[in-house]
Image (tube, helix red, strand yellow):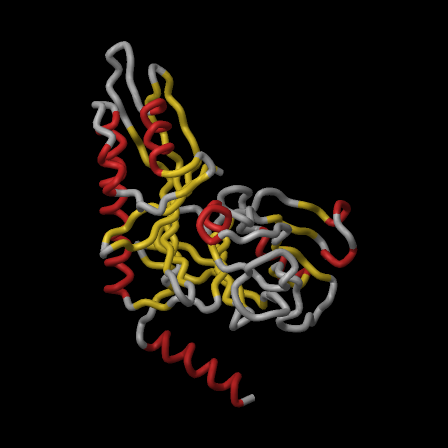
Length: 298
């Protein structure tokens, strides 16, 4: 009881001081984000309204039997990070333990595979028929009661709705939150300019926006440079362009590292063809500047 009262007191203090849920930095107007706090066994649904994150809904969320961030297959821990639902599985495709439905997540993502080097799979948000499941009792998934799962499902879109899993919700004052939004905007402007410069044959700019430790499915930063030269070029006197659409950005704060995750649709000219990909960038701060450590396409 004392612990519960302390938690309620801290929540009320945060509200009184005007702190904002800082994990969600950008979202398109009609989209929502799911944020899970493992320590509080709580899930919230967040939207951005007038540049400020607002909580639309909440529920109890059960996470891994063992504490800490996931490291390997079978460790009974829930991974921390930013994920996206890959598909939906209804009750008739699931064993009884999964309740009325499930959303498999894209764990392991590029950050897990190429930077943190975590293994395993099968991390889902799923339901349970139990009305009062035990806290900290999953094998690594995020579990909701059937009633809460049905409610939260109204907000989830496949490959679009971010699921941010953290040890604790990140709370920021409004000034710091706005500074964070501005730093994301500044970075994307720099990154977009680097891509436009590649059309002119200038490729060295990628070292200003990509970390020297960059690694992804295609190799290292030099492999990326070669790939960019093949993708970003124009023929028949077409005017080059690079457009960033439906921008989303999130703060992924771990015990020993902070990552910044930016997701968007990238439209660009390649030769004489217009291409579009759903891209996710994972960034760190390197000597005060945001730089990409890995990336992937959804």
